Image (tube, rainbow, N blue to C red; front, side, top):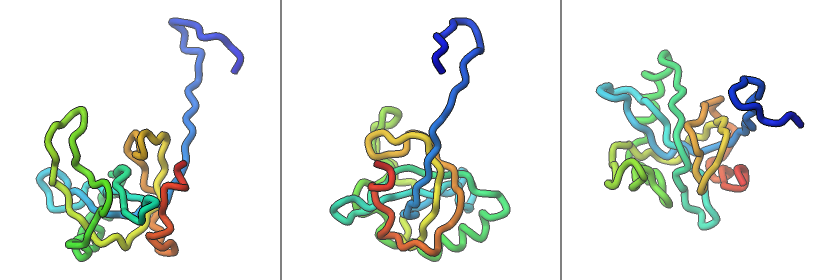
Length: 145
């Protein structure tokens, strides 16, 4: 670790700090051109008790998509995110995108992430497991601070 950088050589090893967080599923997006879930939209409760969108996960096994789609479609029509919602303007898009389905915030997942920027996961996360033992209101920003 005390070695100097050596240009042109592959002598360095990149080490990522991977962490986990329990997040509420506040919505989902369909796969392009299909009626199957493509990604889960993740949220955490802020200090005001509102559910803010913090990122997504799309690491859903193909064999699980049909059952998960049915489960999520049954929860559609909920409030979804009550704080910051997905689809706002970004550096790639100047318009708000409404191409997501809000669901009742009843489901909790554990995801792995590598970095948080501005109270959002910097990159996509990896779905590790479902957390039926955890109440959605327990999923707060404190765990990623």
